[in-house]
View 1 (tube, rainbow, N blue to C red):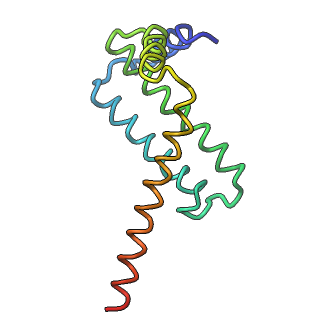
View 2: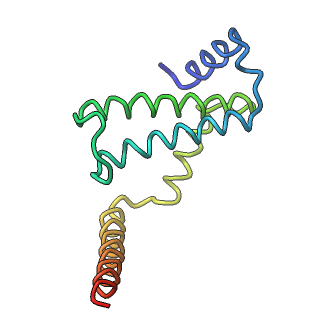
Amino acid sequence: MHIRDYQSWLEEWDKARTWDQVLLSHTLLHAVEEMGEISKLVQMLEGYRKLNPPDEDAVRDLLALELSDLQVMLFKIAYQCGIDMEDAMRRGQEKADARFPDPSSGPVEREEYWARFRRRVDEIDSSAQSDNTE
């Protein structure tokens, strides 16, 4: 399926149900709601939350559906604003390529990220340890 085809299908599908006649801000609220669902599932997969359902594959399956729901809302925002997502995504690719033209910089930036992350975790651990000794 092509992006433009999907966006056209969604707009026609919504029109048939009159769901195209909602405020843009309400569509955005629905997108934020879907992000909350995605957040919970990602937290489960990372171990921050207990898996629910207890099967990781089932959680991934739920995540796939929630990602699709978010995509629906993003494409709906686009058609409500008269934005062609295929063109927008092509422009986004061009922007990313211009901003990060050298793929070899990725591993270096990733290592810098992990170093910052480790320092932050160490700071939190040190603070917690000092709180426990007081």
